[in-house]
Image 1 (tube, one colour):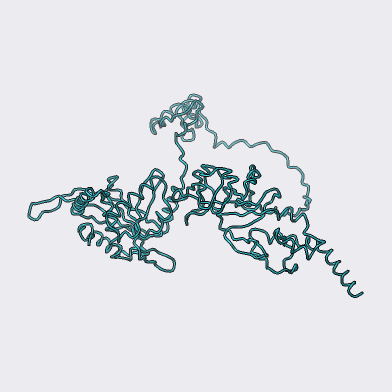
Image 2 (tube, rainbow, N blue to C red):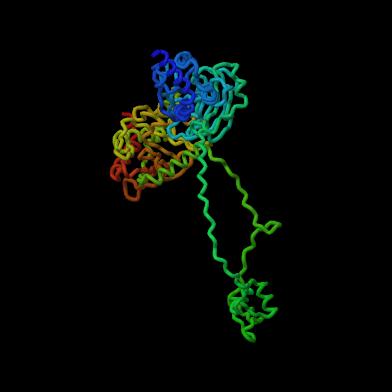
Length: 547
């Protein structure tokens, strides 16, 4: 009898399991939300797992504990049908696998809201550069229904710096393209495509559209509680005030004028308030208007163009949409001018020997079939060697310390139709002039084709901007490219008259003006002057760069 009573008690407890499940429904949903950081252990104890719903492979294990009370169908229908994996979004989540083990990963595994959808992966807009917050889809290289393999290029994404190829991470089929060719301003993490594992599942995503929560849209705020009803307060009844007739304007605001004087004032746009009448009882007469016009003169306004309706003609203009590179350039340069204390140092350098050496080197380059060396290539080499000689200028500012770099990587400003790019020449102090010339030409061509990769422009420690050779600008001041602490603005070379060796003698020489923009938090005035002295020495004695 004792055993029979225990069996009956356990049966009553098992019959109450569905009620406990409904009572803990909110806990279950919260544990499966994308923001939850819960974990499920490998234990087979049902009380530890809280009946949270299980993968298909584990239902047999659960059923042996609750054979007569499965998980309510409403929960499994609404919350646990099919799995969805989102790629490319930096969101931590919980991946449930065999044996209830859990793993914290970058891609989030959620659950489809529609029981008819098979397992699929939601591909989000990836962050392809440190400063990227949104991107554009240049074009898709795969079509809906195509099979994709790991390493194959799905699409080309226009980032804040360049156009980058986005590769597929897993094998499957491209079921749905959410953001088509030319889609603009897609936030990082926003869903752009859906992939599935089986080809027969593609048709089920023909009319698929991501929910607001999947697209990163903010959740709707709960409706605010209605304000408490205010009880009407009885107002004391007051007797209606007798309506009074509108008062006539005071006599001071009225101006009496003869009909002829009033007409003359209207024709010449003369306010009557500015004229003192000399007629009977202060009336304004014709003579008063004539005296006013003679003493003050008639104001003639320039005619303004008007349309037939009497309105001013609108200006003719064209609105040009911002490109990604234009947005980033604007924000970074504005940040630089607002937060970095700039100061500028300018020096003139004689480039006669530099131009002579360049001519000799180009003769050798043409004979060997190499690339021609430009003045800018020699400037890059001289700047790199000066940074090696004065390493304080090869630094950047942080809130806690000044970081001084051991590598000398020179960014070179390149203007294109899409905007301003700054590809980087790494270890420029250790490379020869022919290597620098070939690399600059290659990167400049990639910039014009909008095909630079992040490794082509990231990691610079100093920047050179040359407006002299291509545009003939004599001298200018450049804006520092953060987080760097200096940028060199190079002007054009020009012939000047200089004193000769004897009296009344003079010579001609070519001089080039360069201006160093410095971050005063990192580079003091004397340090900036020391760097310019070293740079000038390399330019005026270019043979020392070859040692």
